[in-house]
Length: 114
Image 1 (tube, rainbow, N blue to C red):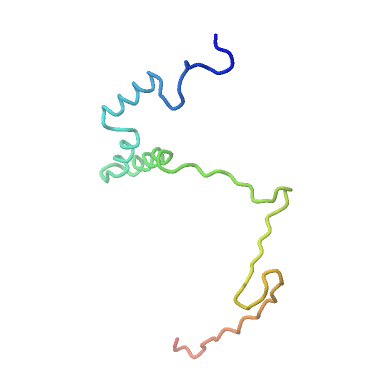
Image 2 (cartoon, one colour):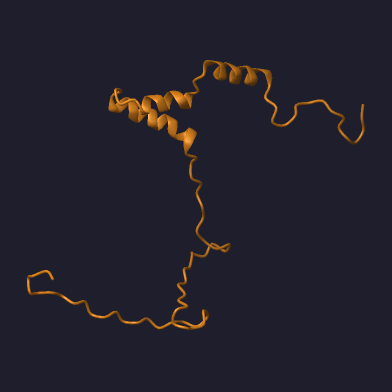
């Protein structure tokens, strides 16, 4: 028996076992994967809408991964703070910028629309 370092044996990472390899070979030999089948139903205009929607729902996990939840906060569970900086007025980014009033809108009441 070896001491310290493992001397071979065991499964190597990423190499499928015999059952998985046989299943993948059978799917490849058939020429039609589950995704191909669902997409063929989805794209067939002769199929009823309910069948096409079900095929789209079944094919979605193969094409689009689920979005992960993200925590919008700081490390100390403080709420997220957003600061808007404007550099066009020449102010320094650490100095607050006073809000400027917008001009009054021009309203055309003549009825001509011009």
